[in-house]
Length: 347
Ligand code: TYM
Image (tube, rainbow, N blue to C red; front, side, top):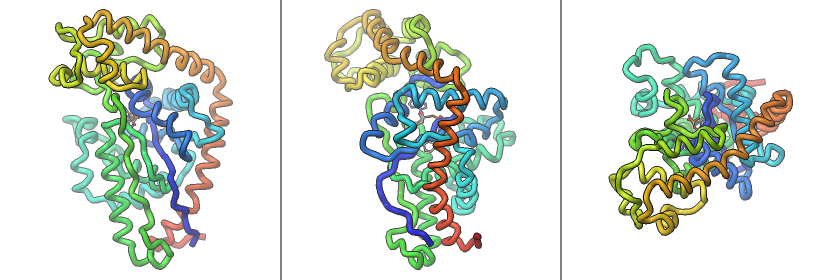
């Protein structure tokens, strides 16, 4: 049995379900970019997760390429790190099955995202949607990833991934020890949920998350929006009648103001305190103008580069294939060791 190395490794994923937005960018993708400097990273377009809700096949293909383009346009380097789509590495699905047999129904029943996504018509949700968090645990643990940058909404799924790793390590403690992994086989992955924009809210309702699936496009800023669209959406964003406070405490109970200040801080790579030092007591009209300018300056070059990359799907597919090949090289020995630990014969 081959021994997996224990070292720092970053893994994260984004679903190719269309409308990549500012929440995905500030909550996740900017973190992916920053982590490249110090870590070995795998960034995955999680197409198997996407199909837990029906996806039009042509749209799925296009959206998979679009997320890949967004990664690269935002500054992820697919030569130094691994960018790939999940379904090209079959180990994700294989390990997810093993984890389906480790995770407990009680654990899955507590998942708030399933409850939100399945809604009232739970009987009609796919079985895949229910076991989605087990696949997510498999994504991470298939690479023995140690750090996982995500937005705040994925926190509960990360806790479940840790529970699964822990239970696997306990259930199979005897064969794991025999195979020479005294500290357990799967590392417990650390969520990285940092910065001022871990939960970007809808521009129209400060109590709702900014989401790809919101029917109204005015609730979110898409990575492909042009300057005019960005300016219009920010101008129309819901606010309250008071000017901005000069301290962060003054944002309490003002969800819309808090959200816009958090977005500004995320885009400027600074803190809410610093933003309020500049804009405290300013009317929203002035703040919104500055925010629109900043958002356009940060996002429109990314949108432009995404469009350029999307014009060459053959090249995007080549990058994904190459990423998958390199992902396989890490995953295959870990999956083989997992099978040995569980007692599955392999050739
Ligand atoms: P997904 O595709 O919904 O979102 C991708 C990333 O964007 C973050 N995010 C947000 N951050 C701040 N504010 C928001 N409004 C906002 N909306 C989304 C998400 O937290 C996420 O980091 N289950 C995951 C994908 C996944 C994954 C994984 C992540 C599958 N396997 C393994 C990490 C590790 C998801 O649905 O993300």
